[in-house]
Length: 315
Image (cartoon, rainbow, N blue to C red; front, side):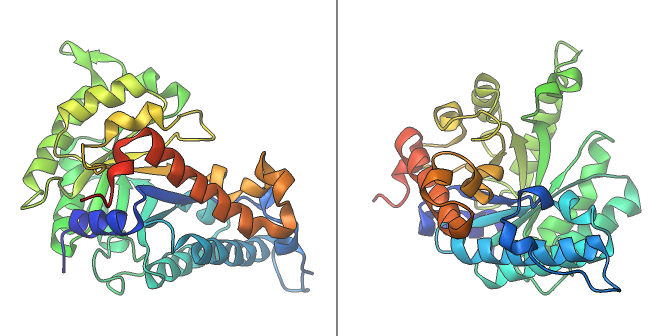
């Protein structure tokens, strides 16, 4: 087995793309042909939607697997559909692993003691995707119940060569409502950042970055730059690019000189590209997979042009 960051960096270098495609299916935005089926007398709307989600995500995985190192299923959109949605989440994660992709499950779990242990054991498969039903390489974690709640996730991640990404500075507009509150002379998110950096340092081993990473949004570029300086051993998962307004230039500071240190998420901007300009005019719903591929390639090129990610693969 190999350290989570070693596996992730190798995949990023091979694809020359620090990109994770978010799998956030929504019934009202799926290509029409995926919802073109008749309900049987015994079927439920949620079961039909779950089947459509599976087809949709499987096709996205097939399209992006040659281009990017990872996908990030958002658990909420699957869980919304109940048991059938949860089953599809598991099958999507396993399909992604079998396609050679790394999987970051965006479930934002966090709790105390044995409950946190159960979450960690259930989601974090790490290097061996057959180890758990959910088959995740990494999991997003909410730290706001206290530092002790992170420890079960850290221990499981280390044991299984998995990773976790702790919410530090999120990309949503209301993040400041709690995260910017000042305690002992500095914003609350900086206290979280300091704890995460220590855990990253402790779990780095021979790698430049630890198995404990941070979620840091693209929509706060100056804070992102400040956090990169304060967290040199912490790998960043960066949401907020594209549909939420973050640009490649906004996130350039997340990377080190080699183009490593961060992986940037895009969800709606890629998976529903067929429904927005310029891809809508070029492809349309009948060629939605081609729109997904084009949007993915455009994001990779954008990051290569405007961030140190352009140095990936260079001698």
